[in-house]
Amino acid sequence: MQDKQGYEIDQILQEMRTDYWRNLEAVAEDSGGAKTEHLIICCGNNRYGLPAGSCREVLKLPRLVRVPRLPEHLRGIFNLRGEIVAVTDICPLLGQGAQTIHESFRLVVVEAGSIKTALLVEVVEGLTKVSEEQVEPLADGAGAGARDLLVGKVVQGEETLVLLSLDKLLERPELTVDQKEQAEGNH
Image 1 (cartoon, rainbow, N blue to C red):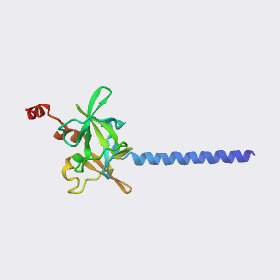
Image 2 (image 1 turned 60 degrees about the vertical axis):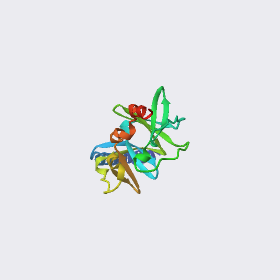
Image 3 (image 1 turned 30 degrees about the horizontal axis):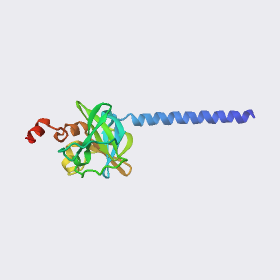
Image 4 (image 1 turned 90 degrees about the vertical axis):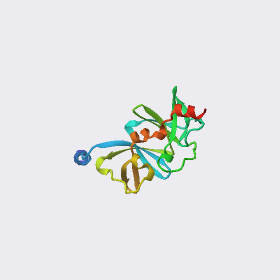
């Protein structure tokens, strides 16, 4: 009976050694290049990665209040714990048509500098880490009107993840509503 227990202990120790060396090799492979975390969202049939550091929260779709005379990509506003936040449909900004809103849609509240908005997305898949070596440049002509918003792409198996520059997206003049200009337009 002692031989059987001794054998199990030796086997367990050997498995622990194997796991230890395997983990050391995995850490050595992972140490190449800086990794950044991205939130994977879907818009149309495309997958996009937003820098996770700028994403504040993901919300179920609340009741939106439509504001007259706003561009099609500004879908409305909502109250987020006492703060009024605009909802931006990024599909038109990425050269796609405006989305038909469904109850299953999500809002990703993003912030960069002094600008805060909620991006309307079909699906939030989750987080992924991307190393600098994985990012490939986009082909010429890809992302036609939104080329300045795209950082590159990452091929993950059969899926492609297009990385977005949130800073450049939020700097876009389409996201700023000039109240003075609107007031003058009413006269």
